[in-house]
Structures are given as C-alpha cells and as structure tokens.
Amino acid sequence: MLSKVTVNLYAWIIEIYLWFTLLISGVVGYYYTVPALHAAGAILENEAVWKIYGAVFFAVATFLMLAVLVGPFLMLVDIRKSVRALATKSSGSSGRGLPAELKEPFL
Image (cartoon, rainbow, N blue to C red):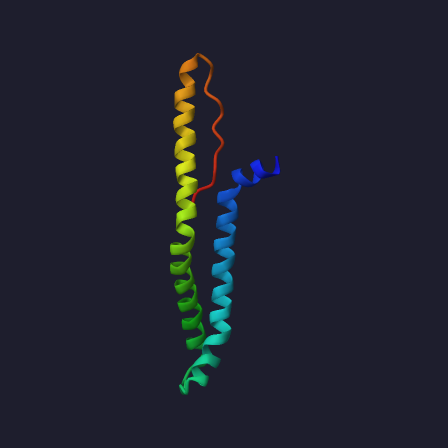
C-alpha cells in the first residue's frame, strides 16, 4: 500500500524536491559568490549587488541542470497520466459508470 501511495504522490515529491533544490542553490549563490570572486582576485565595488547576482545565477543554473536531469521523470508522469486516461475511456464501454479519475498535480 505504501508503494501505491508513493506512486500516486510521485509528482508532488518531484515538485517539492525541485523547489527545495532551487531555494538551496539561491542561498548558496548568495553566500558564496562574493568570497569566490575575492579569491579569483576581483575587486568589488558593491558586494550586495554581486550577492544578488550570484543568487540569481546559481538558481538559473540549477534550474537548467534540473530541467535536463529531472525532465524525463516528469515526462514519465505525464505518460502515466495519459495511459490512465486511455484505460478509463476503454473501460467505460462495459456498461458500468466511469471510475473516478485520480487527480495528480502537474507542474
């Protein structure tokens, strides 16, 4: 039963993981951009602006990386939803009422 619940909540689990990873990457970018630039020999005039740039850059880079790595799993969730809809349509012709479709979250 736990595996069925996990499969049904799969899209939610992925979404929570993606948002958490983006949040962490923004925080890491905020705190480590200025020290990395100082270590590289850069002389920064306004460190607060570079911290914000670092947070945005790290979040965008993480988003692009996760789109490539997690995208196929999201496609599997979408294919699973499409197959379930086709199965519901084909089983509806037996004279019984249509079974309730389980709603899954989508991104």
